[in-house]
Length: 173
Ligand SMILES: [Zn+2]
Image 1: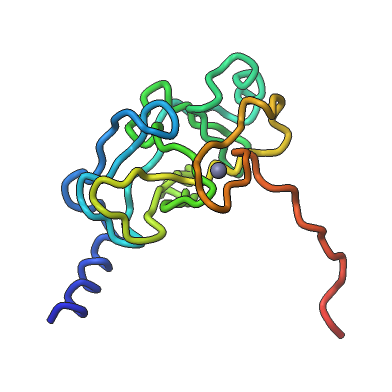
Image 2: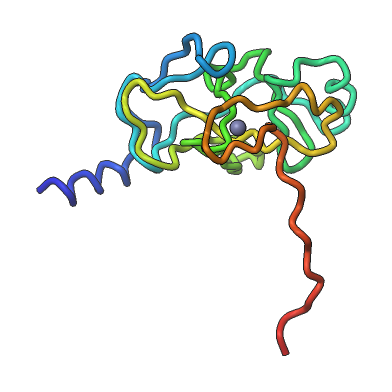
């Protein structure tokens, strides 16, 4: 019974919002407030969506100069979500170089890009949830993005690693 049943539950969790809120925000040993699991979270489970005020790419360019960088989430179309205004608890997700969650862009019915967070492995009750911020390397002040996540493979920074050498080879003949 066990195995196929739990698979069915996981499938259900993927399609719609899961059961009672498995998250709690409290002080983190890594940085400021963090997000913690108060229930076991299954691999692949939807944890929440990033919410907040939306900025178009043009607005975003001016906003970064004045804004609170750590609550902004940059989207692939150049727009921003500012979690400090109207955001939910996912804005407190801290960075780790060995994260247990990932941020995934999805498209809403109206075409708007949404950011969904999903567990990339089973997360035990009491564990802090992390994503890899993978910040753009053109961020101005590298010193502000030092990472102290403590993971064995810590990069020492929340910035994305330098791009790998890109081969310009075409498809093999
Ligand atoms: Zn790190």
